[in-house]
Image (cartoon, rainbow, N blue to C red; front, top):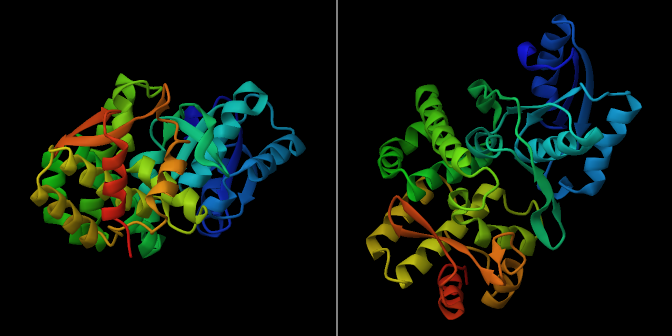
Amino acid sequence: MLPHLKAPIAAIVSNETVAPLYLSTLSGALRAGGVRVTEIVLPDGEEHKNWQTLNRIYDALLENRCERATTIIALGGGVVGDLAGFAAATYQRGVPFIQVPTTLLAQVDSSVGGKTGINHPLGKNMVGAFYQPRLVLADTGTLKTLPERELCAGLAEVIKYGLIRDLPFFEWLEGNMERLRTRDPEALTYAIERSCSNKADLVAADETESGVRALLNLGHTFGHAIEAGLGYGEWLHGEAVAAGTVMAMELSRRLGWLKEADLARTISLFKRAGLPVQGPALGATRYMELMALDKKVAAGKLRLILLEAMGRGVVSAEAPESEICAAIEACCRG
């Protein structure tokens, strides 16, 4: 990490769950390298991804007189990465940033690509910035302490890459899901590398999500509605994405793009990954209200990420509202 520091000054942002496990190790290694380290420990959970928690980072940076050459290091999952990254993008108009993701979801998705931000009560990730880290250091050893539910949530984003652009990877996942669930190091390393490679290709082609990068949001518009509708933190992000992906695929089936067997195959893989395949019964009207606030709305039209075929995602604003509502109702409990 030392060669990537602009100056020997760093602020490590972590949370109350990850800090007891890994903060002293990281801080000690940096201090041994001559780095002055400020430690900032935040409360854990999606419900804390807001202005109040962001201000705690700013307060600590200012109280410790962190200057513009200070590198902010995010040690934790997606919430920590998004908060610390947004703080780095905005503190003194931008300071260096490093990601050290400790969850599977962060290692395969949120730490790569430069999206940072916080939630608003009316919508997820509605306030933020594109801000690229200087380094992403994914230590797969941290997954040994990851709770089972968090591991499963990360698998939703792994499966996504196979569905939108990498069918051979999807087929590999079908043959290796049990190895991933039991945390086989070789399988996890391969899945993380393949996922990051897929994401890096899309981000390099479209950093600010004006085109092809939007494919990474398969299931997210529906999933964000679940998170906002239930209250942030009730469902994990990956759980909401899994149920949202099933909705997107059901809609794709209704449009004549996917076969029933494609949907069944994917539902089977999500179940084997320990993920929900039905959304909460918020009602189609409520889903549509929440989805209308999504960042992918353009010119008043909701753009959804759908599948033209297995392994081939597409951005579409042409789905009739009646079909979207029907797909939602078909994929909800109760």
